[in-house]
Image: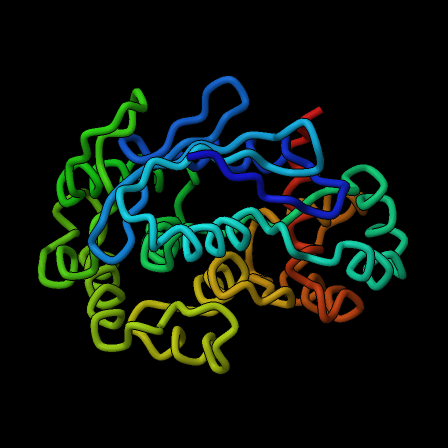
Length: 287
């Protein structure tokens, strides 16, 4: 079935696609010809979707999912994932008080914060990305999907698996995939935490960052990253992120410390997450 997801323009699809393409996990995601496709799982049922810009101010979704009663929840997830309901005008007015942010907004007026299809998947990605490059983290994620993901019969070339469920990851030694034992324990611990609290990654739930920080191996960077992309906290801000520090340093033409970045970000509240996305995107222009 096809569904149109409308949004208030502008919308920077090219930046969204570049972000997703750079992080696409082999077996569950593909980006071809300006279209993003992936496998999805919901309540034990598996399917796929493809998404691309429509002629109007909307994204066109082609959904292949056997349970029609799940469509409203799938649409709600997609609207969060692609940040379709945000009031950019309000956010921009606040951020533009800072001349640097004002300039970045002019360059990318439709930039959104990419979300995630699933909380566990996003948390696993974040933990895998601790202290290594995006490319290295995605390779590890591909190994994890190949080993523990569920095979999927799909008509989409390259989409062969569904991301593993929590039960499949909670009791295995994930360090065997090629990572420090402590990180493997963190991954399994995150999966177990979701089994213990099925609402662990529920968007907009109060106290989400505190619950994440209470988990073994989850520090501030990881918790803030999950809060930004999954919990959808617009003020989440991973201040120790090397990319953010490098971006601000490059834009300002002088060295910046994590503390200085955090102090500068006070002026961007309560939308520091959107400021972060503007900074990250400034490092890799897509036009």
